[in-house]
Length: 466
Image 1 (tube, rainbow, N blue to C red):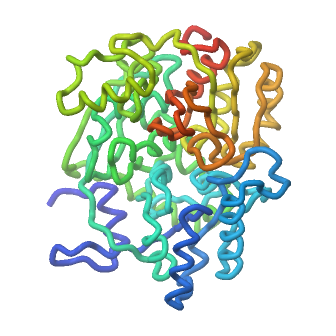
Image 2: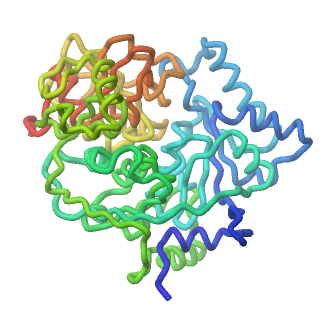
Image 3: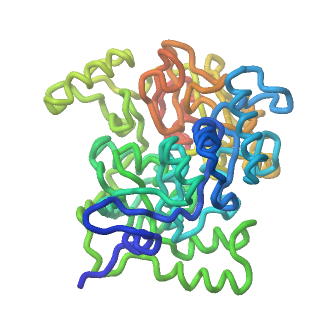
């Protein structure tokens, strides 16, 4: 009998019921909520006369709709204020821990979970947000759910799910200088497409992955959803354990030793069989940028936009539509294209290591005068660390301003919107039409590539700054 994958091990350990080809009933260890997808779920609970079954397993934060300036003042936007107020009221009513605005633990839901030690190996984790896959970096099964499923979790702490197939993506070779985790995942998506992992849960493995930090792993797992996967994860190892050791909610003392003993059993068995395996050669990856309107439309920064003959027939119409929206032409190079905005932040790249990378490029230089830059830490803790490390001072000296935590310009649900027709180099995860504001044109990139664009005012190769 073949060994088990890490996906099998965690899934089977949380299986409440499953037989005869029916979907499984899965127990959920950790439920994260925010102000956008939870109000209707709580309304459903009230309508049914239910209680929250295990309120201690749910953690709330305000992040999507919040302003990133003047957070000490009342939220000006009526809808945003109503949603944040509803979250506060619901958490108070049902005894759920809330890290609201101005709380020292507030931040983007997928940033605060790991940094507080609420995200642990072997867990099942869900949130009404597609980028819940971020938490898979710790060797957890983590995925986004819809509002009706948020209600189901609140009422029962269980979820009805069909078990996904299992894929392993092995990253081999050596990364070039100036290439980071964001470039890795953009490269992978460009190779297998935005539908290449539909129906799968993906394990990332190989020497390049084991050589990454936890924050880099979170970036990679975060964008698993952008290639159609249900989620992505990485086997826990000493890098993971060291990161968690002193976190606020991580196990302590004897509990830590027991937890560690279990976590060490989680990696896929050597004879485990996956439904699909892929190999990616890291040597081929250079800093990446997107040129279209989905994350799969990416290329190396020295490359050129494909011409129609290089695009599959079934994708040609959407390819041409994307280029028309972006104002680009087939065969053009991305290098040198002017940019108007730079957004540094999001649950993909809003952690302290991301700010360090950005600052490493802008240190001793000046922001281009015509570029508007929003530098947004992913949490209050990241904001505090950036202050203590002197990163804020480096940014301000270069002409940047660091804002307060929030999802910000990742999505057009708050005040930070890119104006119509403007080009934004963004460290976020999606470049759909209108994602950052009606008519906004988004180019996804790493923190270093975003920093290079902010300094030069155009798409630039960050390797030239080393």
